[in-house]
Length: 357
Image (cartoon, rainbow, N blue to C red; front, side, top):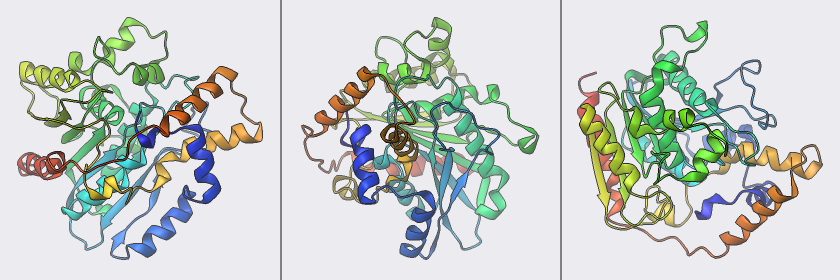
């Protein structure tokens, strides 16, 4: 488990000390801090469109990091990980700002999660990311986005979500408002991604997504190495040999599948580094640029539990408390100079494929 993976008590602490702000407060603070950057939160679903039982008032959204110079630019939609149980702050804003600094328009997606492991998500996160891509393309003119140069960049379970969109985009339809607007990414960057539901699976991600009693058909559908085709968008994939949470074999399986099907792919395996490295740089190691707005659904769930409006089984509460205790035993973060080169490598990859769009 990563240091950012705290569930119940992290949310309780942060709601108490103001680290986790509501989205309007976050918008005001970030705009004040970065006047040259256009930053705003956009809900991607209307209230009558979104129905997840443990949303607790949360609606999936994207936060923008835009150059307001009137120039159309390529776009990266950042999708943090978290085992489909939370959306990691360590893989959100910090990554969006990096791509922004490299000249992209950037967004961070906060999608639906199954924090309590009580209500399987099924295709809801996939519908969230599909709608987010369509939402950005629909508003490409006002966002200053080149609609045919849109990449998704996902981490861990967020990498699985991005990869799922790459292989299943044709399956996810939308309403008349988005008719004719493609949800297919033009490229993807998958960072230490969850890929397989087989022997090397990160089982917790699939339990949160599909439930512990998932059928063989459901598991196969979400096992991305099986679903790759020649039409899968170009993918840049990276991982570390020493990742103990999501075995490097996940990345190697995806690489092999892309090679066999003829889908464009680049892959880099770094020699060392724990799971959840994000940018692996000084900012990441020192907890900078890691705003907690991606934890909104968690915060809302915890508030409902504390108020008595949401009753959870004792065993679930106990599991959450045990996870919190494990956080205190995690070592401090450190910079990984070898790994922190990946954004520039990904940038060169994206430029290669965006050039022809």
